[in-house]
Image (tube, rainbow, N blue to C red; front, side, top):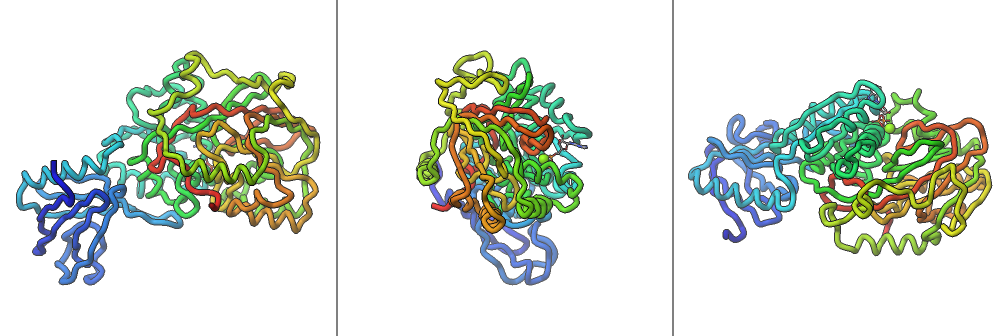
Length: 488
Ligand code: ADP
Ligand code: MG
């Protein structure tokens, strides 16, 4: 067994280079291509510069090491901030001794893919309509090159209509794939999950991991996995798909009339639903459409009446905050280390608290109120889109729904303060905001028309009931938890 550092002597043009891998990083001196104004990427390219720069590459960013006549090391260059172009960098070296190089390659790769499957095979769904219509370009310029460089393979479908992704998931040969990767917003993910859950073999199909590449205007999953700074970055999201492991995530079952379907991210009523669904005509604005619309609605002080019922687990924001910090201290649990609810009864998912059309059973501990609300938002994800951390204490698999309630009496000043707080999740500490962990909730609207949004998808304006099912789906994640969404 080789011990760290794993060393290999190679050449880059006329320069001798030592590749050193210590279990955490790969380090080497690379010619300084800025000096000769060459584009970074392949080495050697163009005349060899005289000076070198030290490159330190994290294990997680190494996509692949390929040894043919040369040694190629493919790396994802981590970047924060807005969507950027190619995140792939390939370093090329000449080897002196093929046998030594092969041994070094095997040693390093065994660490690079320690607990993660190599060369995954993906079903890729690209929604060319999502967001501002950039998903196809993001796939071609950023995601596809990284996936190929990592040695992964895929079948791709460009969705052509609403429910296309659902149809595909319903008929997919799931045994062929390691994951379904959605280059889209949350709508396509929502459809994939519902397609998987409708299958006669849902008991197996629901375990197919989902990967999220932010290509829509509401990318809740991507932001929740990667956080505010990285959530919109397609390179990082792609890395998460290639290097991610299946993390168990709770799924909400939603009943409405005779229907039952599933929601993985958020269920909104009032302002947040209006902002989400009432701004289709502002799609050209990208994510800004949500902010612009929310400010307008807050200033108009609109409220919506409903009967709100919920089964509380924790109603103190102080305690919820403490529990959030405690949860982040606990070791990560992966999907293959857990038993989900479906496994325990082996047939179907039972909604323990009934349907939206049932009367509420007292023994379940329902709390019922009738009022006008600015908004009622249930969520399993902290972020709903960039700078919108509506439910900051949401955890992937605590078995609870985070319920956010804005009361009717907040004035314009408080409303705007809360609105600013939503950018960071601080609003939950505002006196006019209620934030609870619940097992289930029901919203019965009083008006005859309005918006109800499930994962950003339009849903009939009728009473709906939501219940969380622990760890029912899995999403690909490197960290095994969501990005930190509440300060310590
Ligand atoms: P966004 O975040 O911008 O809303 P989503 O990925 O959530 O993007 O998708 C929005 C909607 O687009 C979903 O309802 C999805 O079914 C639908 N859709 C998918 N493909 C197409 C298409 N080719 N044309 C129109 N709508 C589509
Ligand atoms: Mg959407």
